[in-house]
Image 1 (cartoon, rainbow, N blue to C red):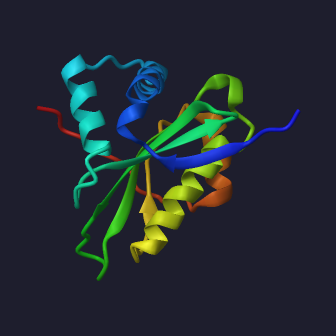
Image 2 (cartoon, rainbow, N blue to C red):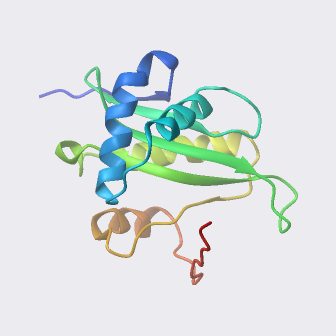
Length: 150
């Protein structure tokens, strides 16, 4: 069976499929967000505005199967911006087929084009399957994340 994978920017016309993928991603992390946050996030990733989130959609044989959201921001440690990969998701039935890697590589390419000095992300320690990929394509740092929610 021949497969055709396309990684492309998320477009306004992708809203229904993006929403399906986004909700599945949130469910993986046992999270539910208000619909207003879904709408706000989609408007951000499709705005094209400078210093706003952007996103890629993975389309396999014409069907959206994955997404990535990323953000460029300044750093006190670098001359140029750095890139935060906030969200990465592939439908369970296509995992192991290179979807996650292709999405990350698209973010890497975009970061390189923007002269970003690094791409970084976080994941939960229980996300063993994804961490196998991450260990191959990036360096694990010794940082521990602290968070205060208001």
